[in-house]
Length: 150
Length: 486
Image (cartoon, rainbow over all chains, first blue to last red):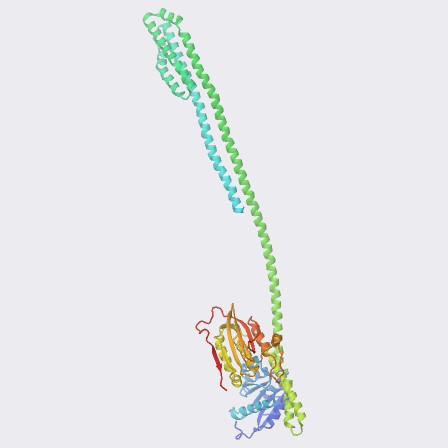
């Protein structure tokens, strides 16, 4: 999934209930070198609908990367992660856990559920920008991902 | 006297009495047997006296018949008596050999009998040779009658003597058989009495034991009930504790996640504001934004400190023998940069093997060392760690040459978020020593501060020694010095 050879914008699903965080992430991604299309789901159920292209997400492209918060209303992030990794069509999509929690049990549990990486949101804005840029850099430019759009 | 002794005494006495009764009654029976033999003997003596008398009478009767009739057939009883009489007298003498009175009587009667027999013989011979008249004449005039009276009198004396003895001996015999009966009866009564006594004691003891048994059973039941009550109570309390523990964990989680999100928002958006609109803001606005960001950041640090503090109690590892020497080396590695920056020199005694959660002990060392470096004076920090065995514990001291702490604040410094300096003088939230105290207390030790001679502070804490572990294999009194050139 190389940027130069891939004119299509990258689809990123952000599962986040905090509008402030959504806005911050959007602000950072706006300045990104990679053309991207940020889809926001504010709870777990909506995220699954989006991934399965159900309801209002019918006909939409499947995301290339998922940024998943853990504490969500309706269905929380751990359950969403479990369902994604249990789904043979979805389990290849990298899931980055992006959360405020530093709790050891959260880290252990999500890796056990096959999260692709776990990142704690820094308090400092500059740090936050750095983290989101690093993620984008790593997952959208450096690693090779299967082309599941086909 | 114990129960066993009482029983032994009771049965022992009864047994002794029975044995005594046996011995006494045996002796008594032997005695009365002897007495009865004496009675029999007396009867025999009487018979013997009669036999002698009968011999004499038979001889006389035979002699008279022969003298009157001249018929020799009358001489048969005479001859018989003649043949026996001496033997019978000798027998009588033998039988009464124990009795001097009878012997003396025999001494007197024996010559009389011999004389009498001589007379009878002479008259029979006379009658044989000279005929009826001379014989009858002799009988008529002779001293025979008087002689016979004397013998009769003597023998009857003997009879009387024997009858006297007979009465005496019969009494003797009946007395000793009365004695025997009395010994047996008294002994049996006594033995039965002691057996009864022992029986009563046994009965009482059995009663006592049964009562004691019942009492013990009652106490046991009571105890079991109390243990059950207490167990139920403890189970309830354990449930409460588990509930409160899980609530605490829930709280810790909330603190680590939910409380921090709003803070992040405050900090991030004020920063975004400052960045995006920097040209439109004046210095005051930027200052205000800095204060807001600083406040949010500090708040976040406080929350995470509080979390670390609460984790000392809830997330500790078990206490195991831990080589504090090796642990200390790792801690020195981790504070290498702080040591470089300050030019600190840290020296330490060989450190012991202690019973600890190595992660927490490491944090304890690290907090104390970074404190010693942080609160330094004008001179580069010089920190000395020493270990001293004190009973089951080790006392570890960390002595520095820093600014020191006045004794009046000695207790305050271990309280969470208590600080003695402004943040501009020495940064920090005031959590480090509170965590140290909590770690030491979790290990069952205590922590305190002593003034260092020549300024500085000495932090001391105790920690349990690992049993059978000492500084064996380590060089004693060998000081290790660590410093990193900057």
